[in-house]
Length: 487
Ligand code: GLN
Image 1: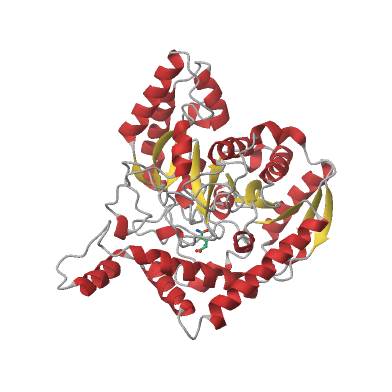
Image 2: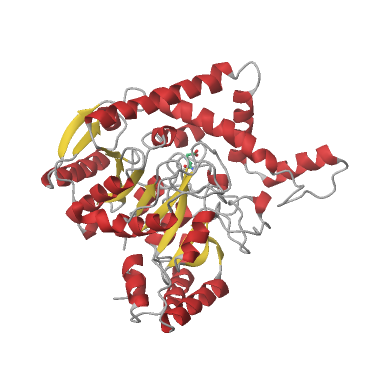
């Protein structure tokens, strides 16, 4: 077996018992990047020297009899909205093309502390705004399963890197689906933790009340492994919850016997591609055969695009317009040349630095927050958000987990939705409400379309019940078999 086919978990075992070297694994990832990334373009920055140096250091510690941690020697790719000390962090935006953070995001620091090796920074939609990675300020990423198709977004680079074997695991971020949807499109596993489960310190903010970082991996066990490493309270992020990380790998095999799985009828209605529906229902069948019971549930507000999509985009854009005010050419990043005064400098810097979609969102968000429109848009959206949260609370009384599609279709073609932002927004219909409610959700491969494109199933849980979500995803993965997985 080639090293790059190992899971992160298996590689870690081999590094710890001396059957594989961390430096060798770093070389392997770098070789794969060399071979595949010319076409896939998953990475914005590859840290060749850094990866090899970190790998050698892990090997040295293993030779000295140390156990460097749960991710010893595992090459990990990091979405470029997460700060990496000394390594360029652009958010896929020209406005940060030259930004080198002086610190690591907490989740990155935890990966390093567990012996993980950061190979590089992955492409994404600019400031994580998008669903296809076509909004990157640099170049689009391609889906390794079909180069004519998008990898999804915004964490498309992370998903593509894992699917193409260019990293053993990756970190993504999810504000409205950006971990789960690209995971689904690329045939990998992606977990969005409960809001507050993983520290947001060092995650460049898109929408603070929605953003969460999480694992994107080859299989469910790897997602469990990474979550155990990155989860838990961080004094640097006051919204991080004081709920200790669990041994998520240890509970995986407990199965789903006796668990109630809700099937939200609104998520299987009009607009869902029949192949996606069949694949997700196959996952339901697997859960049922493993002893779970299936229940029809309703998400009357969360399940309707006119409420969920509208509320999400108003809140996300409002928060984005405030968060992006800091990029002004004064403190860091790009600064326009030749401005006559301060205002002109702000103006030119932001005009040159931000791409079209980011500008659109700053304008819409500013509008929604402005006096006179605040009540009609932002306040209304917050009320809808409360109703959406209630939908999930009510569903949680009737069932332990919810099963749904991740996206209405498999990966779409490059360019297909680019010129129509509304169509692009609508493709987030099954993911955005989950962030508004703050609950955990995973995308796990559950089949393929007739043309061979991966399809993911989404499994949702109650707040902080990631363990249950992972257990169910593990059952689906085992039941569906290797065929659904990335190779
Ligand atoms: N596609 C959604 C958006 O553009 C979600 C993005 C995300 O989760 N970062 O806002």
